[in-house]
Amino acid sequence: MKAPVTAKARVLVVGDVMLDRYWYGDATRISPEAPVPVVLWQREEERLGGAANVARNCAALGAPTTLLSVTGRDEAGERVAQLLRQEGVTASLRRDAKVRTTQKLRVVHKKQQLLRIDMETPPSQEVLASKLADYRKALPACDVVLLSDYGKGGLAHVATMIREGRRAGKQVLVDPKGGDYSRYRGASMITPNLKELEDVVGPWRDERELAARAQALRAKLRLQALLLTRGEEGMTLYRPGRAVRIKGERREVADVTGAGDTVIAVLAVMLAAGEGMESAARIANRAGGIKVTKFGTAVVTREELFGGT
Image (cartoon, rainbow, N blue to C red; front, side, top):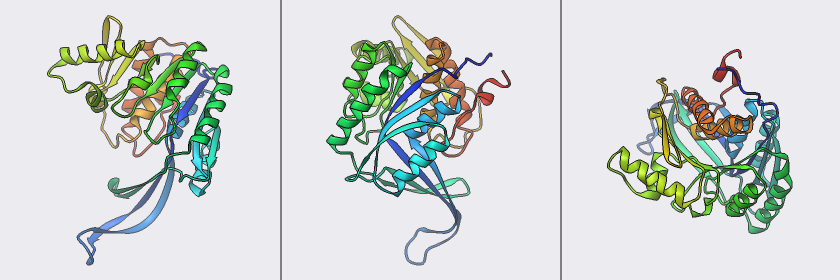
């Protein structure tokens, strides 16, 4: 397949950023103090997480990418900014002295996660209002808006962002969170996984009932499409009057962490590059399959997606 031209596919990412930290070590004995493993620390690795990982994936495809988010005035926030610069992402990070930059610390033994420690504080209303002003300034210069909701409080104005993005003629994609999707009304597309969709519409007995519930939600929220990600089973793209099933590609799964970030990032870049929704979804499905072969949050390159084209 010929690779779409992404050098002018401008993507605006807004959402909750995180710093993913990995502590690698050997866990060969049990502590005499408690029935827990003792990990002999060997090395540490830092990666971008949340909306920062989404932006990183967009930039890895050659798309000019702008990220709007909030961090604390702390070492982790500084590190997020440094890593974004290294990845070629233009970042506008509002610094809030009242919050702690969200971090996820994973303790790993031989690619097996033993423990995860989360550190986070929701941002203040003042800094969120400032971010909305940044959004309005950045909106005219993008082709696609991508709202990455991790439920950390950074998208308090998501309904306003969707409304203003659509009025400006932009496609607005949302990676949703939580049990109330009403705030995503009017978006171009949302991309829930199976568990996230079930939390909103309830369980289904078969594929027919699933399609009915997904389409009812799509219509209720006035979406152009709903893309349901189904892990190794691939995806289903629900549009008015039709559903397209996209089969998963068989690969050895190393880690699903960040797979949803990669999928929606590739989807946004492909749409910004002029691909139709179904074509963009098929390419995003391929990207998700490649990502799960990699440990931790990771990017998928143009070469991996399209070969030498």
